[in-house]
Image 1 (cartoon, rainbow, N blue to C red):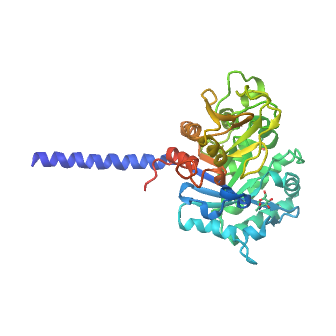
Image 2 (cartoon, helix red, strand yellow):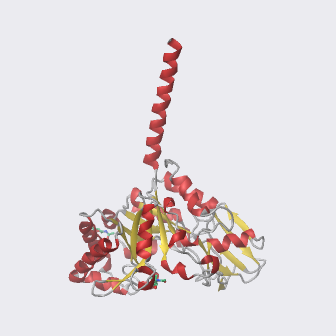
Image 3 (cartoon, rainbow, N blue to C red):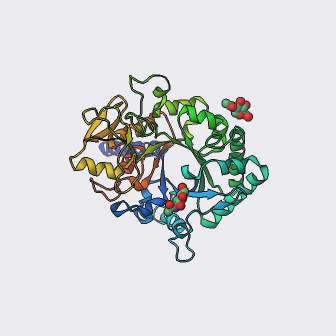
Length: 401
Ligand SMILES: *[C@@H]1O[C@H](CO)[C@@H](O)[C@H](O)[C@H]1NC(C)=O
Ligand SMILES: CC(=O)N[C@H]1CO[C@H](CO)[C@@H](O)[C@@H]1O
């Protein structure tokens, strides 16, 4: 009898322990914000990506990019044939949002802006209180009409590229008004922002911006690329010991520290990661380290067809073929690879594992990824979605099956 009672006690303390562990794990769960670029639909061959390829269980939030703005404060659907259901359209918005049926806790959002939209129209709309208010109203109507859970503003960037100094304050006013207008329906408000100190300090009053946003997606990548004349890593976690001055700030850690120092709240910061690399053509094939002379962009990949850029699903096939040599730089904690005069700096499972651990150590809100359509979604180099699954396994390890 005594023995039985002590067994029961052990049994119940194990149950309690399990419950506590489950609770701690749930509290640890981080956000994974998956950005999807509509233009991936036009890639060739195995690069062609359709909404049906998305596994929504791997994302807590998914953002559809992009819609545009007009100077009168209205919203522009940029690709009606692809986005809308009318006139035999592909119903992109509808199919994207329907992914929630497979993963009911996943939130879907619409992104406005992006690089190609520029900055001038945004600057104009927010400068005038009337067009700004009208824009806010239009956003709410849009979210309801197409049934999104939230809105991401990807204005690249306030007070840059044709914007003006008053953008900094007007941007805060816009976010405040959007957040206010979203309360009734509990819509999520996020912004995708330039991360490095020099451009961020031109565009944002960080402590004010942080008050109104639910999520701040830090574009912590594009630190080096073919706009420079020597090789450098796209999104290194840390600086290298040979970097000095501003170069030493072009890394993930410096950007995160800057945003935290400026008053961004850690749990709102979503660390953006790149599912692509930046590529170069070397001057000399024997000289292939970091900082090697590279006068030209790397050759375009078969899917993305853009000089100076390679998608992860292009890079991993190159490496698997044995024709490229991969090197992991331990100091900056990122890989690069080269073949003859071609060179690319990118992220892989090892570097993303460490970025995800960094997110946990610094108690950030989670990870964003640009973009879901350039992961190895067909599993050409192993299992499907290796990069996205890496983020999930570190950041959502407490997820209950
Ligand atoms: C940000 O805005 C607040 C409130 O308007 C102001 O007090 C502060 O000086 C601004 N900070 C910067 C860095 O401009
Ligand atoms: C298919 C496609 O490319 N659609 C749109 C996606 O969003 C961009 C804006 O960044 C538009 O220019 C495209 O037309």
